[in-house]
Image (cartoon, rainbow, N blue to C red; front, side, top):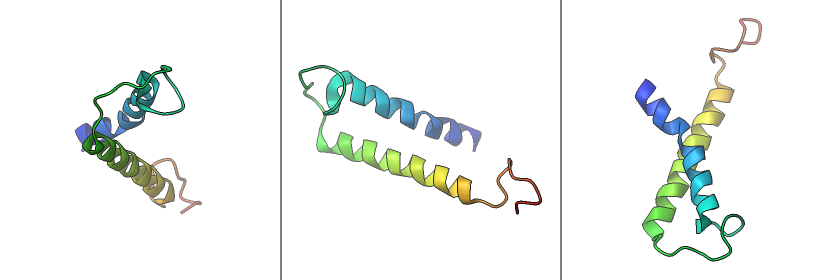
Length: 72
């Protein structure tokens, strides 16, 4: 599980790197880089959804490690 969580934690950084390398429309170089295919965009989107879903589920978990007994 630790290995999976480690990979999941790298998703935001990877997405930021894609954006900053010019693959996005709002950041990075003035000219767009070619080479990204729809499957790559789909992978990035699904990875972002997986990350966001896990973070939101963790925040909603009453047994999350940072919660005190009084909060649960």
